[in-house]
Length: 152
Image (cartoon, rainbow, N blue to C red; front, side, top):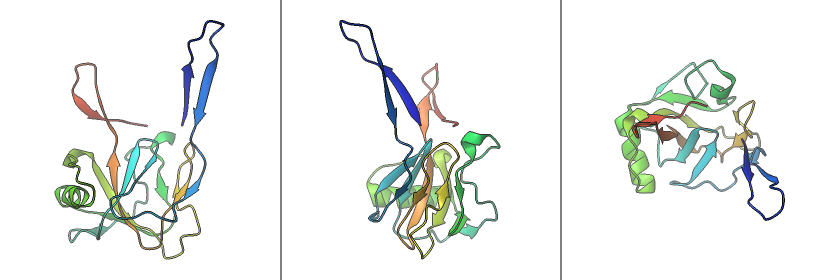
């Protein structure tokens, strides 16, 4: 993701460019830790929810745009009861997330040397072997100050 911000100075304003698209291999990612990839928030939870069912679709965000192509290339991807996942996130982080913002759950592969969560615009990410992670969709306020899910 590239953000441009203009610094206010007494001379001509120069844009400041902040880029955080470097691939990252998270060697330490403990229960309750959080990572971001675009509009996805990845939260490590303690265990796979009991309601988890394997899913064939490895894309973690809904849609067919380039921005929605957050894809797990290895590991296992599951659908689980959103309320159960929200409780696991609360237990891991102390923060409550509405069920409407919960996405799939994944378990990273046993070989953590690869960047298994890929995206064409954001840095690929890899997680420690066997990490159980919940996907949370970023939220924002609309013009009427109603909360809604961000779409990449």
